[in-house]
Length: 253
Image (cartoon, rainbow, N blue to C red; front, side, top):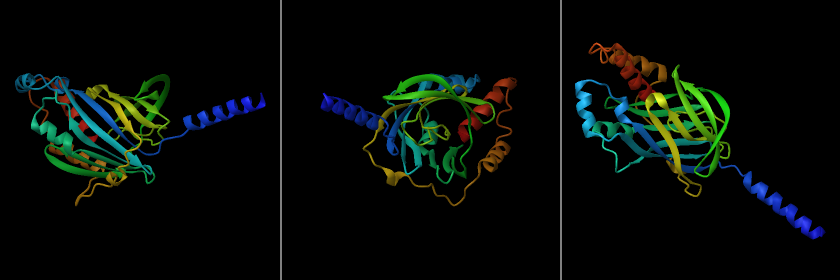
């Protein structure tokens, strides 16, 4: 009887220990969906373009992390996606590198056909963690609501089984990895579809280098100055404001 009880206790201890093993390196695949037509304006040119593109822009990105550093970058397009070459080129060039230990980030973003490299401190996002839960890619995740760029709300589901405090693009700051993310004002969602614990691509996690780098405030000021006359056409001032915001939010996400 004592030996049976000992065996059961040992089994419970072993199972608990396995369940409590935290993941500190992996490669995650995200499916990213944007309702592209909702991001477009109602002018005649965009209305004509809508006939030539798919409703959803669907792509896949990889998030590779180890040693409290990460890199998030484009992997491939869904064969169902029909978008312009300019749109594809921009997404394919974007890269996000984070060093959480040093609290530094480096992002390469293609803006209006030019690659800009932003080197700055990791931005702080104020989060409110809720009691809502859902399972994503086999992991129990908890919902949190955050706000970026002053008034853009983001809805995230994170798991504390994966210890890094990151997520898609520049979204970070939760007590675990974000596996699901929705940004309604950008009509975009991110969902983890695959988590590979055996793929060790840590050599891919390296800072982006460039002859010239910008900080976030400096580049945003420059972009606002260069594009100040871009969104002033027509009489629909609210739509012009929406288009300008979409441009800036996407540029600095």
